[in-house]
Image (cartoon, rainbow, N blue to C red; front, side):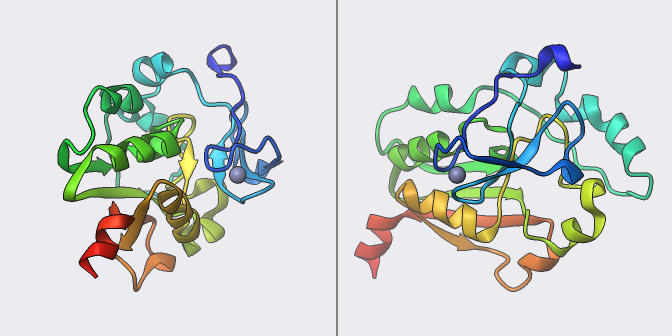
Length: 203
Ligand SMILES: [Zn+2]
């Protein structure tokens, strides 16, 4: 498996090379850690995209995950269809009224670049619906490496309410949580993103 490790990446939120390893959450050779500057949690050495599609798509790694978490009873299946950033760049400004990033942003090695592009292509009044793992859930603290949110190595970003809001804000987007009352008890964050300038104009 080590042969398909990708090159190490800088923090996808702030670009810092400072990295604090979290060995209790990592499964060698995959390195999960926290940015030393902004605290964003991410997989440092994700496989190249071609390996993500051919070898680590969710349905292909499911058996290994189930073995690792004997007590787990509910499966989630997701599919990787295309390279998000390159795909969005093909469209002109203000082109889409909506975008659905359900269980997608967690796989994107350049999540901030993708959100910047989504902000660019959103038409007036448009919105992006996003569902990502919630790294701030109490479940993660209790289960450690067995937390259902850890999937090696196809899941490469781990968001909290704070880090997700920061990244969205840096991209000109305002985050509105759809599960605002129970993020500590929810393994996912569901949210709608809208351009900040439009929300200000509406207000
Ligand atoms: Zn950072």
